[in-house]
Length: 309
Image (cartoon, rainbow, N blue to C red):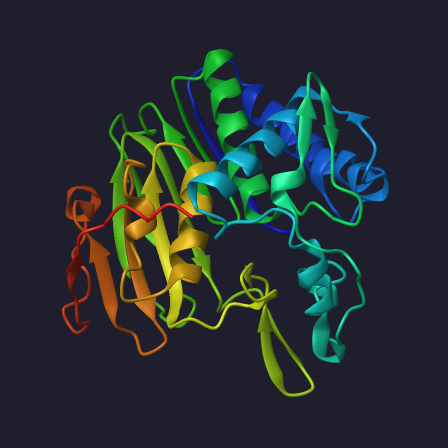
């Protein structure tokens, strides 16, 4: 999934760690937009036609539609055309210094995705990009399957989307560091007995085209890389797919009401803008094992209900 994977299994058969590795590779083969044989590539190639997919891919699409609805469109799985036009038209590690504008006529239309039984139909002229929600959901699937196979505790980290459940190797809760690309030390650490942490940032998957900074987080309202004031958002939620989606939505929503999207979703978040100012939603202190660095400014922001679209 274009990221490092780290899995810790506590208890259960010795084979579970290897099985987790195989399962992550299996999900990658199903969901990668860069693999022409993947189910996602088939959906994109045959957009407009109903395609039979595996239960895993059906769940991915259903979660993506749910995420689009709960974020009022801030998360949109059909911005693939915009991602390609921004220059992200090949695996990120291949972009290098010769990044260029990509070419794509694909449009966004998440509301037009059809799911009937075990088939998915993308609207003609659209493309589906699993992006971060794929990493988050994969972490959830692998965690749940390892627990079902006898593990007492599990931690799955897929490119910074972390899902934990059960005790850590020492028998306590899991400690997850929140790492900012511009700081040598973690911003803080999160303690979780069960749940997920995900971070969305414009500072990692970034490149330049003709002197202009680009990144992979597309604002569905403009079809361009987001240009709001936030650069880094970490969300704590019950599941990694939800934490990933909400982190992206908070970042694209931006200040001053950055945490509105959290309302009703049993999640907490912290956000850092391009000037290093840190804001935190109410309730996040319950999860922090280390205080935020005393040199950073902070504020508490109560999430409000988003107005209906």
